[in-house]
Image (cartoon, rainbow, N blue to C red; front, top):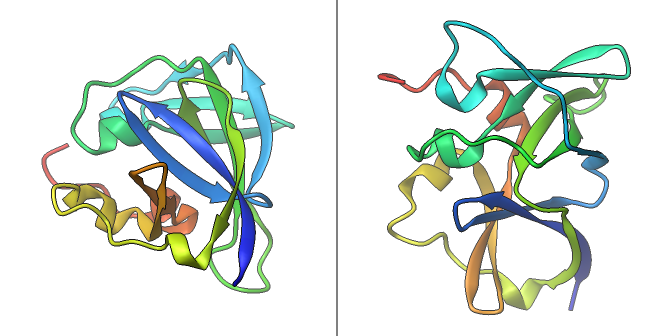
Length: 149
């Protein structure tokens, strides 16, 4: 039985997801973000972190919910391809992340009603009766815009 640590993310609007422990690099409390005009509602903001301008993703808004104001930001790191320099982005959070342990036995399918998760998640696991998608950060931060948004 394989066990791994993960960060459980409260994305707001009763939406939760997870990322690997090495993917979450920094937590920003009461972040100062800046809105960009002519951008999709799910990626309308940027934040400055370590002399970098990072896109801020609002996952519930990407799934069609109303855009939110972040209480916290999770700075995440990912690679588009193995061996390349890491890329960085930020995810809006409603509360601080929670570290949890996940085992192979918790694997489950994405809920049928959650079609939007298929383009954002690489896996899913059951946590206390809730299906928790595991985010594919490379796909989230490098995906083409969704038509009509």
